[in-house]
Image 1 (tube, rainbow, N blue to C red):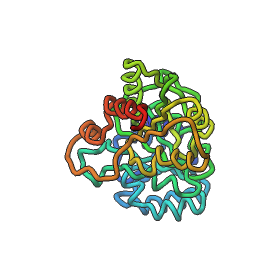
Image 2: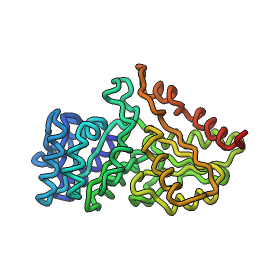
Image 3: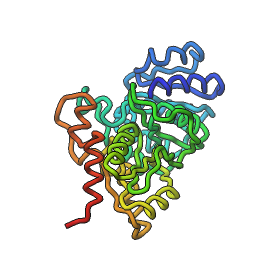
Length: 309
């Protein structure tokens, strides 16, 4: 996913002289082609992420379109005050790109885990939150974000994620994409859990449960038209995300349901629990520990379909 982002950004920078890339001292080889094409518009801001946000704000105030990029936890929780005051308060067109969302860097320990970022950023006025499901969506998200007049946060996985879309689908911020059709339960996935959600849907289909899978790439603003349709049609709607069940896609939809009133479907929120991971291991291990394998997701959805005792 990050390679697709770098390639798309390089192509966009060739087209648009306003684009600046700011890096938090990572991705130097990743952006070799960008630096070769536009060396004057690559700024290595060092391990000073809060300062990087201030630089991005200054560039935006002078008519440029800065993209600030670093590891997910370091571009969100580490510089939250600067994002809130420098970017969102002034509604500046800065794109924040975090790589390694969720548990992608699980093996590097709790400093690199990022399961709260969607929640803390989506509550900020003016901020849009976008979590592409694969490399194709990552490219489309970059182009869509550059058309926005205010701040946008793009949450990427890491590398090696399966490509879901054989060709680019219609893409618009705030409009979900139906990836697989079904009639009994609906899975709404955001970010790098999209391939996992598809596998879980296939597991359910093999068990005789017809399952729709939707890429909910934009967590803010929510696609309320899609939500209205699926909550009136399906018995169970499950959200799947590599993020806390509190505050993420599932939390946002629960808030939408509370404001809307009674709906037909039962909401099943699948994500990380309200606790830290005190274990060492790769992303696959962390997902299993938190119930985020395709088989575990399918089992959770099946349990949600059963009537309560």
